[in-house]
Image (cartoon, one colour):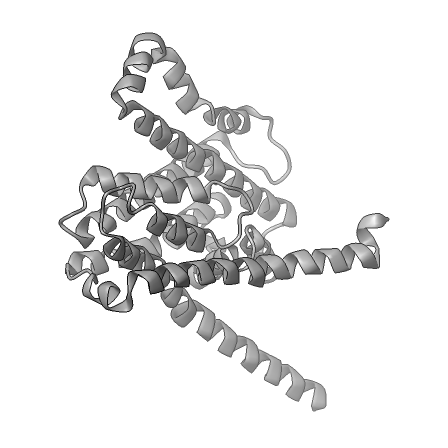
Length: 310
């Protein structure tokens, strides 16, 4: 088959390298040029001093793994609970390597370490990922419509002629969820109550992440209003909805800095806030998850070599 040919393999490897290295380097360079233009002294002077800004980074760091732990506990039972460290690794892979590579890692780890059937595990990972997309899209559409409604001209048109249509647009992504809930039971699949629970946990997580990000930006400076914070977070949300876009956080930082003049805020201040929001989460991921994972891998590799030599 063509897909299994050496040429196809080489093409895949080239595309993979572009995703992993070329795209991040491009946006790091673009961000670096913008920061140099702003000036390092101005950036340091614009560092947020409100301790709440930094304190809110902690729940933002734990939100996704904690809610995913609840989801897999609901689907697979308490006896097959997923350790938080595995869910943190899943996030690191999805964020820093390739989207949905974390799901592959989770699937492989669970098949080796938990007494669940492959069919049940496949459905758990698949259904959670699909319902996460549905819940995220509901929040995405709600944000987009709110931004439209904030314009007096557009909101007037919608209020007069599109009340029902507006509600239907927001609820449109729920249709796949309803399909899941009403589909027939298959081997390894889950009940309607379980899938409904998963959907609402994802919906809660998406809305909470949006709220946390907005509060973090709002607490960064007295110059930022709730609505301005909402606009910045909306930009981030729109970027995250682009499928298979590499280096989404870097793209967000670059676009956010570029949008400072449009938003009528100091570019240095916004650049500092966005850099901290993005880099602090990355630093925590690397220090608390990535580095211990690397040490564990090296240790297990050495033990494996000693056993083979023995």
